[in-house]
Length: 122
Ligand SMILES: [Zn+2]
Image (cartoon, rainbow, N blue to C red):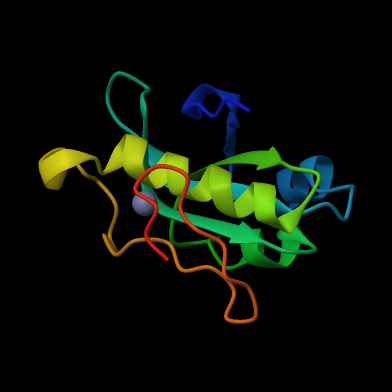
């Protein structure tokens, strides 16, 4: 399986209308909240995943961020793996260019024992 940030769809303007448009399914997935810089490049500030329905999580970002990206997966475990890969791609070694507000490593759901596919942290 291959993971890369470009699989994220968007950026979309973070509005209730756009959330309704993209979150028609109840699949697990990963998302990013962020803003666009002057070159219209998406700068991610928050990464997250949802086990079931991503739209409720997306609504939490309204009025805090202007844009979001999203990627649906088939399973919650796949969503966790994508989340980890995104985290490492945005906040890799040293984290010097990391734009995330919270730089702590993604945490798997407490009832699971999944490992990060990149650094193998538990
Ligand atoms: Zn990791």
